[in-house]
Every structure is written in structure tokens, then in C-alpha cells.
Image 1 (cartoon, one colour):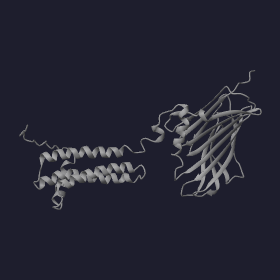
Image 2 (cartoon, helix red, strand yellow):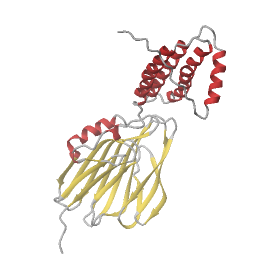
Image 3 (cartoon, one colour):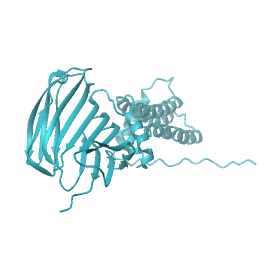
Image 4 (cartoon, helix red, strand yellow):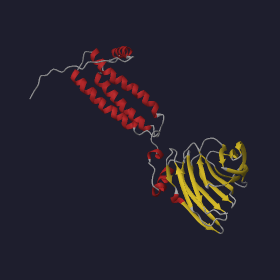
Length: 341
């Protein structure tokens, strides 16, 4: 069956604020294009620019400056997509039916092409935020997968962060911090800042360097209240780019009262985190749990790497985690039978 129905041009409505300026600019450009350039060339140029913009969106995952190229390619897309019809009308080479369908087909190919690249952007979904909270059996698997996100270049990384809590029968505590640092920046590293907080203190919190390590350490008290201390650790000699060193110090003055827990804030990338709690004179536990809080606020159980054992008259709790990133927290809670009056 054949039909002789006449093709009707769709009306062109340009009502944007810049429509008049754009129309004059397109006419100016079309009048100055070489004769060998035709409207089909411009259509293909617009399509290629849109697909290339999508490729640059995807490439920004590994090379962020590719995002700047997207702006240039979108201008090229406007040039080709807007100028092809203007050039055809100027040279009186209009093909209404052909142009109508080609324009829509090119848009159908180019726009999805850019969205495919846009979907690959790493700053909207990361390995942490993309994974929902898991059951304890899966927590170690997720920590191992996040380890590939640690060890970043351009930062000072804690290859190992060790925390030892020695808690006497009266609740007074001695905490020993051990930082195994690696400088992956391009500048010498001389100082880092940390905080210490207790619900109860039996005097000013004290931080004392452990001498005899890879570096000498000075402690600078920058802010303090009776149970809270912000302090800086000055390392000497400076940790040069590519060097590793161990820094250690002890903290005293804090007391564990009615609540027994330790909440560790993760300030820098930590490849291996180990905490050991020695409870003096305790022979059994009534509760012991551990939770890893992610940077997005979600939580996963950390009990699969939690152990405890008797050691003479004491009870020792050990917890290990891997692949921790800034703005995470690790919380260890425990309880034991209380003496009755």
C-alpha cells in the first residue's frame, strides 16, 4: 500500500532568554563556514561530541581533569547540533523529513551515551555507601574489600594503629597508643593531633611519650577540660616522603566507672587496627560486643574478630579491624560481674 500524505514541518518555538542572540550567532557562523562543510558533517560532530563527553565523565574516575573537557565538548555539541539546520536553510538545502528523523535519532543516541559515562562517577557512590549494612558473617569480607580503598597516595597512612588499655580493679586506666606511620605525601611530616575523652577522670589527663622508638615525640596540650584533652604529637626528626616510623605514648588519668566501653575515632586511613583491653582481677565477662561504624552512619557488627581469654588473674579482650577510613568509629563494650556490698 502507498500513501501520498504530505510531510508537515513541526513548528520551531525558540522562547528562551538567549534565543535572539543565539539565532544571530548561528547565522553569523553559518555564513562563514567553508563550502565543503555541510549539515551532515555538523550533525555527526554534535553526536561525536556528546559521546566523547560521556567518555570523559567515565574517565574522571581515574583522571579528574577529564571533567574540564566535558565543558568544551558540550560547547562543540551545541555548535554541531544547532548549526546543522541553520546551515541547510542558509544554503537552501533543506530536507525536512530527513532532518526531522535524523535529529531525533542523533539525540536518542547521544544523550544516553553521555548518561552511561555519567553513571560511572565515583563521588556519588563509594565502596562504603554503596554496600548496605551486612550481617556479622559478612563484615570481614566488607572490611577486606574496603582495604583496597585505603593506602592512598598523597596522605600519611597508619599502617598499624595499636591501642592497649590496662584497667585496674578500681577502674583507673593506662592507655598505650602505638602508631606505625608511613608518609605517602611529597612533604616532610612533623605533627598530628588527637583527642582523649573520659566520662570520669581522677585528675588532669596526662600524655607521656614512649622513648626509644623510631622518632622522638613531644606532646603539646592544645585544649583541655578535667576529662577531655586535645593534644598534638610533634615528631622529630621529620618523617620524610616514603619513610615509615613508629610513634608511641601513654595516657593516664582516666577512670572507667559504671559504663565499660571504648570508642575509637578513625582520623586517618588505618590499614590494621588492634585494641587490647586487660581487666585486672576480672575472671569472667557478662557481655562483650563490638561495632564498626561507617562514615555514612551505618553500622556493622565486629564480633567476628573479637576474642577474650584468661591470663593469670586477669581477663584480656582483643579486637582487630582492617581497612578503616577517616570518619569511622570502632566501639568495644564489655561488662563483668560487679561486687555486691
